[in-house]
Length: 571
Ligand code: NOJ
Image (cartoon, rainbow, N blue to C red; front, side, top):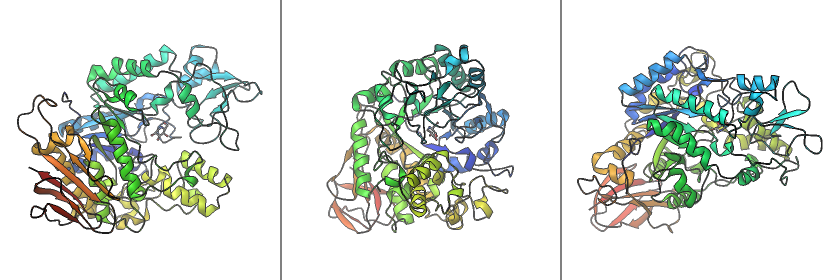
């Protein structure tokens, strides 16, 4: 049985502020830029805007390294701009989410500075600071997520190290210390009091570390071990997450979406069940497909059939336990249209098909900036074009593993996080209309063909297709089915057919139902060859499709052209 929550039927949109819209010509996107695009986002159907970090930061990891949790970085604007953004969003019935980055702060945060000055004082306890390991070197052999050791010498010291599971400018906070938790909770409440709708919660599974920090089996020639081992040994994270929720989010009825990778169904209940730690967690099943511990250069392509299998796996795991957040891309991933659509088949029609496939799944749909106009990966021709610390680490890893310059750059072009961080393509004006200055990261050269201005002029564009998807999900007649109805794979053995039924819901599931809800079929032909399939019932009508399609009422069969996607309503 479901109890309606305000966020269940919302459509989310992720903004990467640095690359969204620059209004002062410094080449960096800003809050005023976001405010200026609120109507564009509202028209798209977005209800909730998740902003990647805009707090004061040296931007070593583009804002995921916070030096003051109570301040807006001047490059993004002022606190008055932020207040205005929240207020302007509210006027349009929209909500703003911030990014809660609490596994680590910046090495330029006052806490870390004080810890360096006096590691034995109170701020030393805010971090993981340890003496040398048994061999006189680093305390453990852990490899950071961005490559290289996860420990570095504490600035100003020759015998003490601090832990950073990400970049060396992101020291890990010690959640075992109640003072740290208190500081974080106070800050979260301070922001929620300003009227935020909630938070996306960064890297949260890393906050729990094992009681004893020790070496694990190395898995590469660098002699370092991946962090997966320490996470497996870390123990129960539940008490931290419960306390976080109770002390903050629960008091404000906030929406939260955790960056949490694949918990099993039992723990899923704890994460996103009715009383879960979070409202939702992302489904990363598709975008982690084909990854190997070796790094980008070794990753495997995800075929349409692989994609389908991932989707079905994730949906089956979540069942009706709770609501996964569904994405095809985010600021840490390449563009979904490049990852999931085969080369040579990346047409506007295929992009619409992919949109339809993921958007109507059970869960909360997220659109990442530029996805709605079909933005694509950039081709990186030289290492000097790489901006992301993670991608730079991957470039080094590929070279060390024996890749040629060309192979290393091919891996970066395929998987780099920079792919989704190139400037939003607003128009065919210089720098895609993102800035009048020089953008901090070069735009994708295809902006003259792919841009919002052009899409807005073409009623048949992907942008309008996203609007239709959003409108369908919100339509009073279909909303309850699309939000609460079960998802059942349809003809799952048919290769490259991603089809599912969204079942109607009854009063036992939604007690406040007033009228019957329809049963829907979403069918996406994920190949260039046409196909014919039987329909699972008497088709009432086609609600949406990316190419003309007959309703199949005459013979109960659907004829799908290559990369055709359609939604049927059944009696
Ligand atoms: C996950 C964020 O999405 C990513 O961008 C960041 O680099 C790491 N966490 C560290 O905060």
